[in-house]
Each structure stands twice: as C-alpha cells, then as structure tokens.
Length: 353
Image (cartoon, rainbow, N blue to C red; front, top):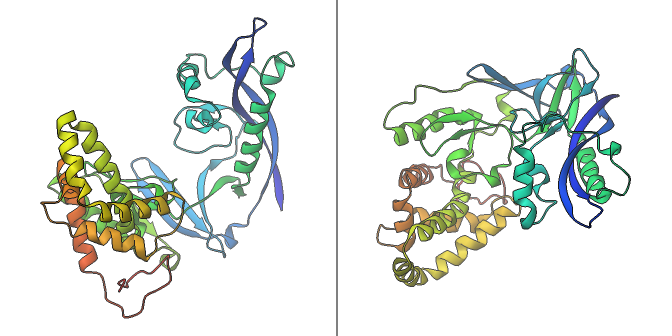
C-alpha cells in the first residue's frame, strides 16, 4: 500500500539578467510523492538509542533493511515545508548546502555560501513564479529528479515517517566523546567512528583512553533484536586505517615547513611499497566497496609500524591518533583465530591468514 505526501522543497539555480550576466537564486518547488505505508508488525524495532533529549528508533524488515524514525506527519497541514541548514533529521523538504554544491563549479561556491547565509533564506519565492527562460531550468530539473529518487527512501508506519538507513553505529570523537549519529556508510568514517550498537563497551574503552577518564556523557543503547545487529565492526575499523593514515600524512605535510617537507618526503619514499598498498586499499574503500584481504593486510602492517618510520611519525604528530592506533592494534591482536578465510565482507571473529 502507498500513500501520497506533499513536499515543498528548495532548489538553487542560475538566474539570467538581460545584460547577459547571471547569479545564483533559490526557489521552491512543489512535488507529490507516493511512498510505501508499512505495517509495524512486519517491521519490528531492532534498537533504540537515547542520547540527551533525543531518542532514535530503528526498525528492521524481513530483508534486513533498517528504517530510522524521523517524526510524525505534519499535524496541521498536509505538506512537508521547505527547511534549510543543518537540521538533525532528513525531512523530505530539507536542503543543506552540500546537497546542491555538486551542481556548481568552484567559481560559484562562494556565491552559494552567500546565498545560504542570507537572513531571508527561509522565505524563497516559488521558482515557477519567475519569468520563463530567466533561469536555468535544466538545473532545476536535475534537482527535482534527485529529490524524487531520495523520496523513494521514505516509508510511513502508523503516522510516523521513516527513512531507509544503514545499520546504526556508535561513534567516538577525536576528543573522546561518545555519540550516535545516523547517516553515512561505514566506508566514509574514521576508525574511531565505527562501532556497532553492540560494541558500546568498546566505544567507552576508546573514549576513556582518549580522555584519560570514563566519559561522563554516554548514550544509552536499548537492543531489542540483537540477531540483526552486527556483533562487531572490528574488521571495518581496521580496514579504515588505510584512509585514516593517508589523511594523517596529508595533514602532517601541510603543517610542515618547505624544508621539512622535502626531508620528510625523502624518508617517505623509503616506504613507497607500503604507501602504495595503503593508497590502493583506501581507493577501494572510497568507491563504497567492502573491505577485502588486501585492505586488512595493508592496515595490519600500519598497526605494526615501529616509531622510527615516516608514516608512524605522522601518526604520532596528530592529536590522539597514536591512542586510536594502539587501541586498534590491541583489539586486532586479540581477535579470535580461525583456520578458514571467509569471503570479503563480513568475516567477524576470524583472522586473515
């Protein structure tokens, strides 16, 4: 069964002047979308996360698809109105600057920032009220097509709006704060941001190491369907070391003087074979792929680097990075041993031979 929802959402396009110039403008578009209405009994609650005043609920269907509860349908009107900025929930009418930045070149990014900083941003005119031919209709059409695709991720259950989502993860900040944030696939995260809800004790352990004390503020995790939540994301965390260490190298070089950079690059050249393996693994993950044996082997070599290596120097220079690496190395060394190598992807509880 499906139900219709009305969505007013913002678009950004180029408006043309009679003199041949152009500027970026914002307007709203109205769209009717049909989304599935699901029975709660067929999509039971898998877990809830209580953090501060906000409770997050995740449900899971028979195929293993997670659904994240966003809130109730509008009570006094039938339309999800346009919203702007960094709202917590991905409501159908929400627009963040990063949603549209990809449609514009580097030269227009500053104009885009100015557009989003205007005090009257919440009151844009309807784009259809502009004179036909006075704006770039192709840009509007592209954003409408993308929004239609995004709306396919929504569902309704008993008057609540849900969003199809990835498995929920706990995260630790580089300063040692534990938090929960729905959203990105694990491949886009840093190693310290990738813990299953069933790994809250491990997240607390890392946060304690970084802070030097047990963190006072911790989310409360209520697990109702343990079977459908991953027991561990250890292999994913270790695979993410490849992306993490490349970021640390870039940051270290950026902080160095010209003379220091030359000497450091010379030392780094001695580790070119490992650096090549790490780069290949990082590229594999950036493409949205699951980890494979090569990713884990490259990361394991980084975890075992002595303090005298050039790569280790960049790790030691970054705030709390050595703590993160040591935490991962200990967990990796203590993982259960298996004589069989699983297929790439989930291989919890086994060592890569």
